[in-house]
Length: 331
Image (cartoon, rainbow, N blue to C red; front, side, top):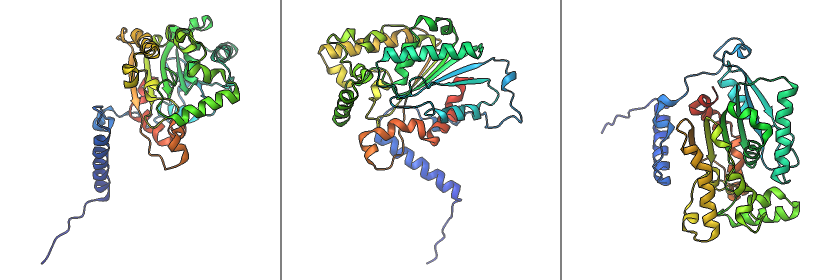
């Protein structure tokens, strides 16, 4: 008996494998979300290195200041990959980057102290270098996002509020660490807070006051800030055990909805305080993302740390996000 074998080109075999793997992954998640890979027209049509010379200084759009703020125990180089791919993807945009370093080694201090440092750093940078930005965007990782939001409430930042453009929040604990499902991480955070006498970790757990409505995070939720941005991008990951997905995406979670105690009431109020001014403004683009990383089996993956820092050191994630949909929020 003769049989005929039809050989497919390798690129078609790979494409078929990808589609099959994607559909299997979609079934596992059981979430009715949209997938960017289903809409190829959404991909950016701006290639890297699209011009032969650096035309940024002559951009008719004017200067775009981007302030990058690292997270707990981080440093000014943490967000270097985001900066690199923004510059590669948008070579004609007149970017000026401030890679915040004033809080390096001091992120266990309380948020008011760290806010003072960031506000001073931004004001000093703009004044000393004589910058006249027409747009100002902020990119934060982890608790750096809380520092950013707190800074926007200060009177020194008032002259810049009308220039706010995009807020890119990577794993930001906007609602603190309430309803974190990882007991191991909660215990570790408690130990770290006691050992370091950390004001920031105490505030993130909302234990800085016996009255939940007097805690730093609750009072911050009552202040204006996010609604000044034209674009708000909230990234979280269900693989991240350090920052709960609902906290990173500023949304309700099932445990909070079922919680009839004061904590549940306060949590729901915080979500309303943060989201209502944004929802009421139709000109604000709000996008929430849940990122799933291909992580190797390790202790860091088990405790959720790997996913928490993958948004910083995964070139695949950063490049694909910016190339597919992110660049348009910085033009």
